[in-house]
Figure 1 (cartoon, rainbow, N blue to C red):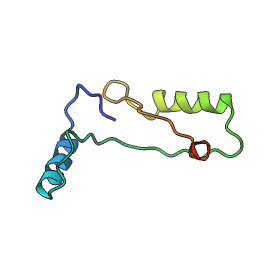
Figure 2: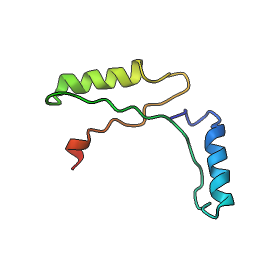
Figure 3: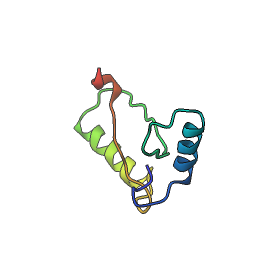
Amino acid sequence: MPKAELLDPQGKAVAAALTRTGKGAFSSVRVGKRFELTVDGPIDDATRAAVEEIANDILSNSVIEDVVGIHYPHEDA
């Protein structure tokens, strides 16, 4: 997601569209990006550490983005 202190023109455009269509009950909208990584095999501590490193160091630009969350869907159930 874009850092909170940065402008988000896409988010503002989506918020305006929601208001125009009568769905403007949201105080703000932020537009970001999402990556899905598929792991073959069990998810152990080493895999979790690698995923966190990849998310923070490779997939995001720490100057303008924050990593919001890392989810393991099979463990969320």
